[in-house]
Length: 78
Image (cartoon, rainbow, N blue to C red; front, side, top):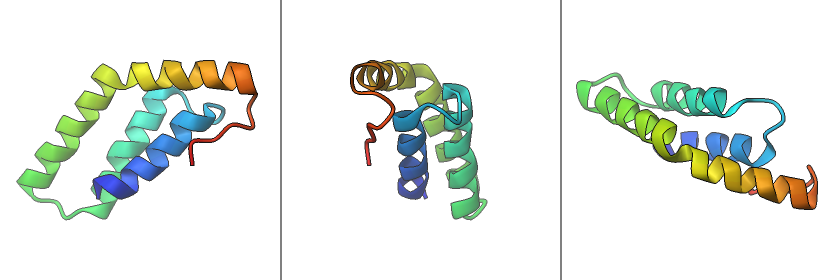
């Protein structure tokens, strides 16, 4: 489930036009929830990964902002 969610999340981080960073991180959590069964282990993993994104995702977001500023909005990670 996290790989599927990561594809959506990374795309949103690379374009930065439709969603804010916070909303991109929430999309990651929502897609992980939709793609996995609702066990305690999966719920814990989903929240742990979401909190890690919120804590450290600013580095990737800011790096992509710089690339977008240099190369224009045509740049994509995928």
